[in-house]
Length: 601
Ligand SMILES: [Zn+2]
Image 1 (cartoon, protein in one colour):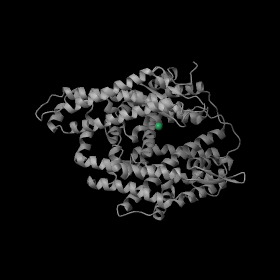
Image 2: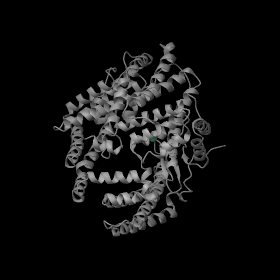
Image 3: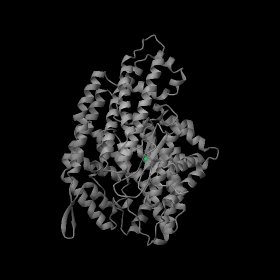
Image 4: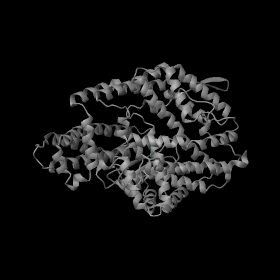
């Protein structure tokens, strides 16, 4: 089979960004939203009535509109990604965004009405299979509504948040855009933007130069440290005030609720990770020897090791496709079958050409019940892993495709379960498949460095944010103190194993300034080790089949994270056992790395 490396968008809407069908659809959906808002306005349920037929119609209508917007959004965003100069596609995307905004205003009203049902009515409603299937998301909506203040007060907060929260987020982005970092090239000083410099710094091969670049990076950001501390203090200050108004006792309530998990689970995960950091000391020492430094610096952890000349295996797109389909098959024939369909039916835009947006993603076509994957495939093993990762996301959507819309909306902490899982299958196979020892060492090193990021770098971000929020509750925290807090957090998370740290990280890392979600970092670590734990579990327990895995994925938006693990894996995430098993495989990787590199030092 010869797979084409470009995606098929014609079957979604023919004619590209000038598609007439798309424009027609857009006005149809616009009319539907107007009709929907009337329908919703007119729906009032008497306290004693148990007639839920109209509500069923309303929910079905909502779902239909939402799916149409999903389909149109994926289509137009896809065209923008594949050709960043396509202005028409950008206009289409903005038009979809506007309708999404209109529908979400209706969604707020819908939630209010569902929450206004009495307990008796709600119980009665759940006797109907249609509503019963949505039990968890509906209960969750009602619970969230209880946490809210009056509509008037919430509206005031929302209005004020435009300048009080979003405004500071915008200010952060402007400040980052004003960063200019001097670099001497051919005896001349040129200025790099923050992202250009970051790329340069991370790809610098000489460790001494790398360290110098880090120093320049730190110094440049430090010049604006007070401005960044103002934005960070106001972002968190707004949130803390908002929490106080809502009478939330703990600032962790919002991020934990958002991820549908308990604090005990999060604490156990970090505790178990902390107890498993010891082997990294040996790994860091060996890596330092291989790189040629006394002790690893902040940037060296993710740098590549030098074990002499070797060539990385290169894959053609077809080889990659066959490799992924074969390796998926050894775990799950259904997953493999979906991947084959994705390649055959051209769900994937992989061509290596200019004019494409960087990065990779998977987006859903809810009406076609397919996905579209965007990436640039240049033949490296890491491209093969990315392709597998995105196909994992596609498989997650694929197994959820027939569930009610509300039961498809999984949280951030489990969003990466299926993708990490698929990536693990394939990246482990590429390590097995390495053509030389040197290549194997490099692949293994990348994998361990990634574990170090999740177990140490992200841990440092978590420790910092907890300590910062604790102090922020007492008043503003100045830039010197922020630097201190960050350095302390990094030292703690890396167990003092590095020769240099990055005290300005609280300013350089966008994640601390994202306005949408607080504590944006820990879900990554959770997602990775949750997936790794599931992966190991399926390898060792022969009674588990692909259908058990699929059943778990299908429940990702239908229960809390703890219940999900209890029901499908029979484990308690509040206890260390599950996490320990996941971490055991990190130790194995380190042992193998130490063995393989023995002869190189
Ligand atoms: Zn992903």
